[in-house]
Length: 109
Image (cartoon, rainbow, N blue to C red):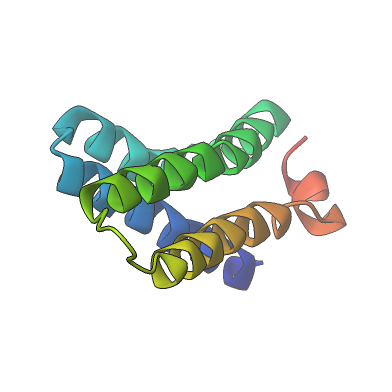
C-alpha cells in the first residue's frame, strides 16, 4: 500500500515546486500538506486527496499555457513544453488513480 502513496507524494512535491516557481508560498505549503490528509483514516479524507489530485491537472494545464506564453517566439516549437506538461499531468492522474483500490477502501472507512 505504501508503494501506491509514493507517486502521490511525488506529484504533490512537483505541484508544490510549481507554486514555488510562480511565487505563491501559501499554496506551496498547502500543496505539501495534501498527502498528509491520508493520515486521517476516514473515507472523506481519501476522497478529498483523490479529487484534489485530479484537480492538479488544471494546475499543469495553466502552467503549460503560461510557459508557452513566456517562450512565445514566431515560428518557435512548443512541442517539448506540451509533451513535458502532458506527461506531468498524466503522472498526476495516475497517482490519483492508484488510491482507487479495495485495499484503501478497507482501511479508509
